[in-house]
Length: 313
Image (cartoon, rainbow, N blue to C red; front, side, top):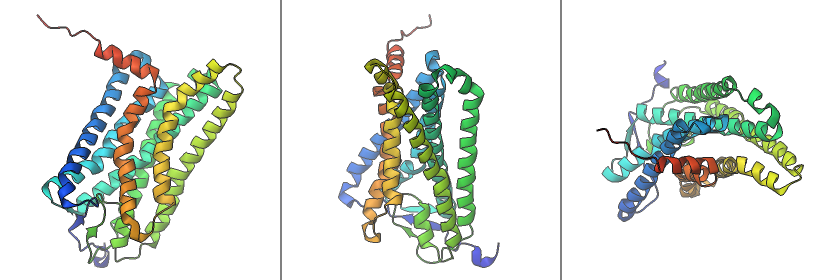
């Protein structure tokens, strides 16, 4: 690596959330409770799917991976944010910042691909119910998840390697609560045109294309539902995809509002609040959406809570 391409910055400063010092304790308690609820809620979903054989279906196979991704996604940013708020230590090493950025991009992309796989699963279940078990066999489900992991890893790695070629010479203050790629590029004193080109290209590949696939899937689902003669059949069809559609609307709605309709540079606080929505709030709500709107999950949870405890004599 040429000397001019090496970073002169050994650490960055995460300025965190735009809150007053006297509010730090209240927000620390709030976000700690939200993070613990996120972790416990998503781990509970994984446990229920693991223990209940009736949930060993493609839909819940994808849901278990989505729950694991949400736990990991939230764990990439929230613990560091809580540490900074509690100890008033805003520093993060250069390697730690790059690592955080890598996993943030990785799990964001993985969320996109898993939601797309779940939309395809719902499309097959409703539009081709007689061929569902043939199309959505175990090998296909594993392949979809494996491809999602590989594509997410490749995209995150490409951004990370390109970022490693940039220099950060002067300002090392990040006006955010995590190492966001866009903010890091603004701090660089190198030419970032290639990075921005890759961001645009990758954004189309990992956000726009999956969203289009999801919309097409639900377009076919909607057309199929309208052909169902009975109201009961329509309700049953909607119940199978209502939870997923709610999560998709919440997740993509926040991302589109943040990245496709960016605020002006003077309103950075709004961008941070939007980031909190999809890094903290969305993973928190997912377990509640899938448990409260899903009859199978509620039955499985009731069975787990009512399971008798056997004591060893």
